[in-house]
Length: 295
Ligand code: ADP
Ligand code: MG
Image (cartoon, rainbow, N blue to C red; front, side, top):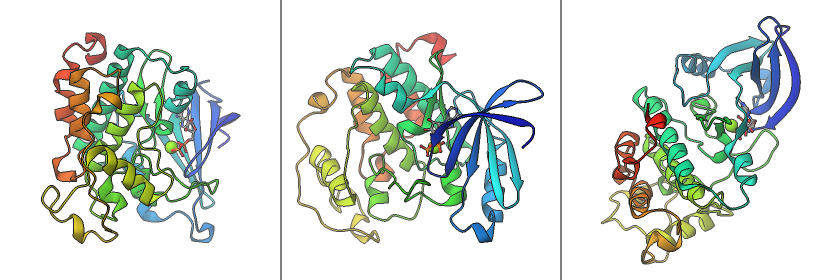
């Protein structure tokens, strides 16, 4: 730890506190994340350590790099690449306006980072704007990758705040235990709509019931026909049979027809029908993406 000089606190997260810090030797600026564990007496579970160490191998321009894992005295400190800000803070600075090319470029990078991780069998499971970091150059990087698998899907934050349900798919809200990349694809759909609306969340539910109600009111309540197996999920409960609302055009008025088509294919209640990251990257919506982003 003497290797780093702590500069300032930059965030309070799900698993611990994040500091901006400077490597005393190289001068490099990094983000230090001190992970708190529920049961301090137990120390860091070896399963978590194994998972975390795997994450060091994930190297991609749209994933926040994990440089180092420092493990001492039953504490865990993760050393990450430092980014300028998170997407939530970026939204707060927008005043309700966002350029449609910026939406497209950020969404593409989100999908490309996801595709890389999914092709390495790593899921995020807690995608949300606070976990997406951006640089002034317009780069987007996924943060906190794989931590949900190492430590368990978060229910409460380190600061005892309840974790947001807004980006959780209906299958997870119904208690599905089988996690597949589709969980992240739902979240990416919610984030896509939020990007298009310059930071207005798509489904800001207050609890599990309200969350599902908001989803079904927009997309229509799924049935055993549209989603075989739904009724057998551990926490399934029946909801009123809402009809799908006529079009997404009122929900994301600034998004092009192609953009709305992509959004619709990500927001599919039945996880097996949800579009994959690679298919989403190849969607027509990205045909006119700035080639510099694609490169
Ligand atoms: P969360 O609990 O929201 O997933 P984290 O625990 O990763 O978030 O960190 C909390 C906040 O700290 C983030 O939302 C972000 O604002 C900031 N942060 C985390 N990692 C970095 C980083 N590598 N570079 C810059 N800021 C970061
Ligand atoms: Mg995080």
